[in-house]
Figure (cartoon, rainbow, N blue to C red):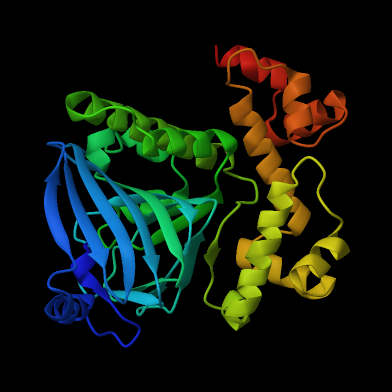
Length: 349
């Protein structure tokens, strides 16, 4: 969303704040062409500092990179509906973004270490940016630009996404997952693009397509199993205090940081300042599954993508995701995907 649509928590448009700051600081926001492909927006005032860069990669597909540090919570209010369904795919390396619908009071969230896919068709969304640094890679995707207008492809999508894309009165859709190691590496490659000019545009487009492939592979592979989702339903999760949600997300981060040797539940709870009962209940409310159900899903998603890397062995993948015994890993993988790790590797080559 353009920077001049951002508003402070009082719903005062950020454009007005920026203009006031410009009168005091003789111009704090600038818009300039970059490398022939990019528009760069720079923000520097009492609200925050940083930049947002936008690349139109091809008709119907654009890339935005944001690196912004907000000194206070910032709110974007979007009153208009989107019209034709357009997908937003985000990869968040730092920060927290929470969106609330005025229509049904639904709350969804993406934060550090997560990727999300959303279609916000209805009007009246409020988007909150936490008072911290935000590093976000966002893809704005028109379905026909990437082959998502093909009925055979559409029929393979999760039901909720298919309905949001195709019905006459489209609904909103949001899903978030923890980024896999391969996703994170691809995002870092995109952020550290070594090229300029035409090679830059081609490189960024290839990485954008790679990220879309990884994300759709993840959501299609988890159909029928418990999703690893950061979307918070309006009922249970909304009863949690904001501080408690942050503690639960911190527990998730610790769990994934110690993937090879995760702490016991009671140890994890103590590390984030909760009792184990509160952590168990809150984790299910926020993420839609148990603590170790989430860990298992993440391990299997990691394994699936690591098995696609060249020269990887079953034993090395098992070890990297916390299985001391490759046979135990193979049993878990087969139970999840109905195919052995070795057979999966062979199918993908």
